[in-house]
Image 1 (cartoon, one colour):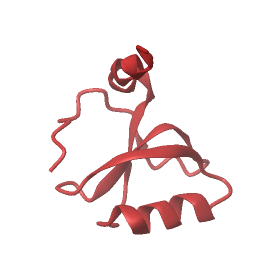
Image 2 (cartoon, helix red, strand yellow; image 1 turned 90 degrees about the vertical axis):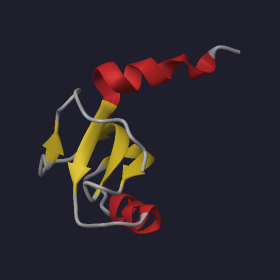
Image 3 (cartoon, one colour; image 1 turned 120 degrees about the vertical axis):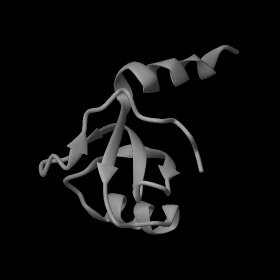
Image 4 (tube, helix red, strand yellow; image 1 turned 135 degrees about the vertical axis):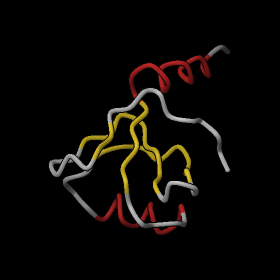
Length: 75
């Protein structure tokens, strides 16, 4: 059961930050999944930067920061 190896993938490729003023993951989920133009899976939240991280996210507005050098410090 080494299925949790894709955490390394999050670092290298699939972890994107969508900058937003939303500070609660619950609100983030509502915002993400109510927008049919946005596809992705919420992993967690960076409350310091007021943004939530998603795996394999695509959005037409491209509010994405394709930054692999983020501090992965979950609060």
